[in-house]
Amino acid sequence: MSDYTLRYVGDQALLVEFENEISMEVNQKVRALKFDLEHKQIPGMGELVPTYRALLLHYDPLKADLDRLKEEIQQSAARMDLSRLPKSIVTEIPVLYEGEYALDLEEIARLENTTPGEIIKIHSGSDYYVYMLGFAPGHPYTARFENPFSFKRRETPRVRIPGGSIVVQLALSDIIPFDQPCGWNIIGTTPILACDYRKENPFLLKAGQWIRHIPIDKAEFLEIKRQVELGEYQCRTYERGQ
Image (cartoon, rainbow, N blue to C red):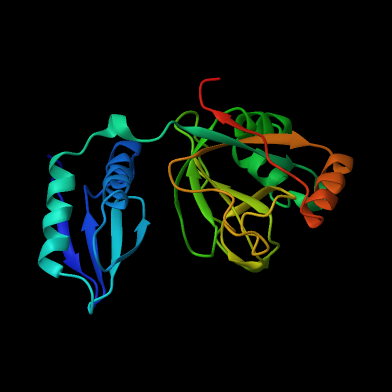
């Protein structure tokens, strides 16, 4: 059985919190609980929102039996089985690491006492795990588990950076879905839309997936961007380990 803390979030949500740390082990508990609850027919249960270390369970107070919801959470936590989680999927994200599309690449290389080429090699050489979506619709918080950078956020955040920017700090990397403020370092840009409201499911990624950054040149970037605008581009995906 996995220990957890249950908190009330107003009168329409419950928050199930696991250990107070950011790790794949804790995040898999969040995913396993979500997976189990989703397969139950619980009256009044609404959207389940996973975070780094907690699961937010929305419910309709006019339809849900709160005591039953808490009991179902307890039962799911008691029989938690991480082996039942779906197989890991990798989505390839094309990235242009160049000039105006990678505003902080030179500075990042200086901070790491290496070359821009080596920074690109490190960033694109590992799979990144998608912990959660947050801050903006479709905004994935991702991390790799080896060879982290040493630099953190910028001392002065930018008021606005372009959607599609790939931003980094330490072992973390995010895809910025829309123009927005950000204090992270811009290492590159992708023509892919992390959130596309033209689609029935607008979000490119979901918690528990992996991504791999694929370096591209300017010509490839413009061609992929054209295909994305036409709704024709499909990211390459495959099971991790293939």
